[in-house]
Length: 155
Image 1 (spheres, one colour):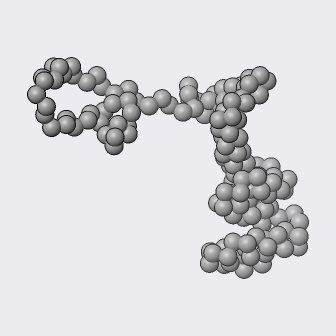
Image 2 (cartoon, rainbow, N blue to C red):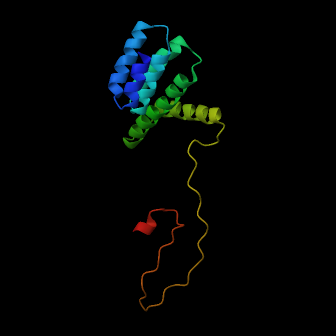
Image 3 (cartoon, helix red, strand yellow):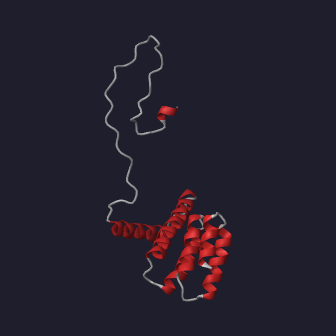
């Protein structure tokens, strides 16, 4: 059954593969492999909630499974990032939610050994001072690409 599911997945029939993995999981309830495969397929499809649920099923069978733990960690971060972005956009990231988010970000930084989660953009080198333009019109000068706004050259 696993071979059929893997074959279906590799030929692009992801839902058929998931159905076969679920059948395998029902036939062999102690096996973690079908659950890890379902979790990976759901993660690859961007269905992070379902990926987490399936990865948790794998961890019930093997609490040390690295793939399942990784899927839970990364899928959870992707869901959290999406939700925090939505809340921030709606200006609803306040009070206890904001405090807990900051605490979790601190824990994540410490776990990763980083001082910041998202590094700030690189500071551009100071541009040399130009002499003021004369009153005579010249062709438009090329814009500096080293400015803080990387899209300024496109204006």
